[in-house]
Length: 175
Picture 1 (cartoon, rainbow, N blue to C red):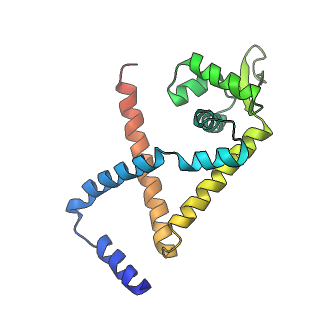
Picture 2 (picture 1 turned 180 degrees about the vertical axis):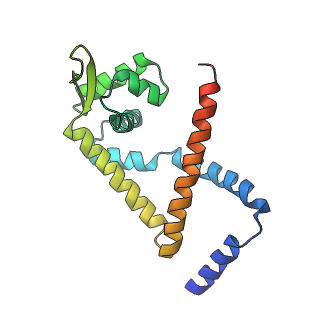
């Protein structure tokens, strides 16, 4: 059976490319529908912090991403999530009251307030990552290692291109 599966995958990969781009589009739609349910985030919340909402995970992810560029402000969170700063401030306040985030004075400018993850927030992010890796591992469990390696490179390349186009077109859209 494994040999048959390998032959089928090889045949699919060797097909003419006339249907490849439409297939990617259809597959993206299927993936969007599945990820829209946010299964991984829901599982992480159940495991670590059952009283949180999915919007809290979005803010945590925004904090994680913004940290790469230095200190994180509510304005940076709002920009990353493309939400109104007052909405971002309300969600951050809620997360501070739940001990997921904390506010503190900026090290660079004490007049400015920054947002920092607490150990609870860090544990929640670690649980999300563990859930995500377990899920992906299960999906590719029967794949040959060579296919996993190839897919990881191509998927990263695809998403990088997708992000670049999205960001370039988003900048052209009036706010």
